[in-house]
Length: 119
Image (cartoon, rainbow, N blue to C red; front, side, top):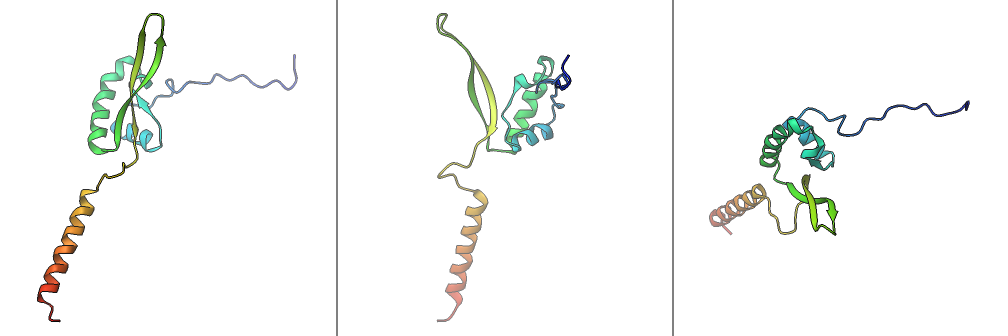
């Protein structure tokens, strides 16, 4: 027997350490940069996941779905795909409605001030 053998510990997978399905826990995982999918949770809890991810998508518009191929069999011609969710960065040309409103308000105020200010 080896003197300096590494102790063998049972490592749990990510699915074994799955946190409870709440909107807050899914938001925290997505904000941490994780990719979240329904298969991260037990099959019996997946309806809860779909309800929670719908709320997360309403609250965080940058969270978008994408499809990833998990299994592909070229001979049979079958492909298994999974719908996953992650936060995408702001896209070029995308505008913030709050910023647009503030710029419009500032332009209106400037126009009103200039119209009444004697030069």
